[in-house]
Length: 316
Image 1: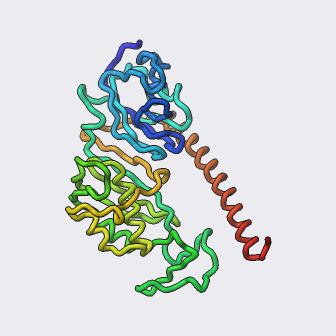
Image 2: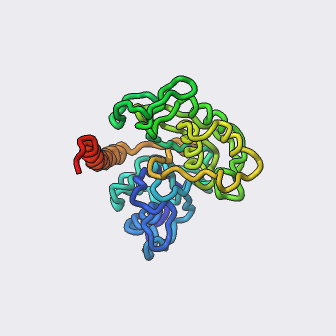
Image 3: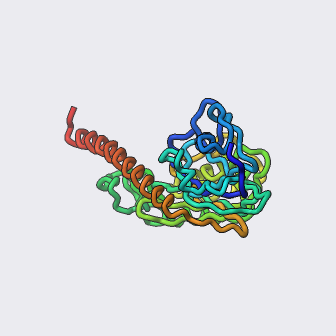
């Protein structure tokens, strides 16, 4: 085992789609288990059996992302030898997990407890109502104006009213008890900031807080999405923030995990230095993964269009 050095924090990016979450667990492939196996291969800790690896002295991670959730700034910290740069760390990591920045931190630093804020971004596919998108069809008799005169189309089931979304996010911002949007029994009071920015057909919902109860971000997105689509009234947000528990039929299930990214974790007095070679390799690697995902989406889109053509042409 290699002797430890100073405590160092590492920024870790990963594509969470192929992992059963961040936290190591028996008989499952996780991001944390992958990181610890890499450290074992580097000789920094004793080799164990999969996720049962020991951890280096002082080890902690900023958060425990769910299965399918990705990250660009997950942070792990532990006593590391001087030679363990992000570039060196990546030597035993798969392309789906890349370390790209690091910072030497004070003794006793704890990646979980010392985090001053955490930011998540949810990339929601949600064309603006009435917009012309590659997925929209020609207007049909099912199209109808909404109460405010805007066109709401049956051919745009994912379309949202941006103003309704932003008003809902504004109502959710501030200090609230989010017990109706999580399964946790404690730590549900949080001071939260939530905003939305449109990029084409994607509505990027950014949520920042000092910490997050279980599945809060995904349930919050699901609630806001329902308001934006007109599937529920804005007053539903007030009911979810009420001190009284909501009955089961009014509960909100979590939105899918894949569009969610742990975007940033902030620490007071800590400045991360980017390992430019490691960062460039990560950029190229994630670019390749992005193109592969786009190709797969193009194939499923082609299948959809072929079926639609057959239906419109009366093919049997």
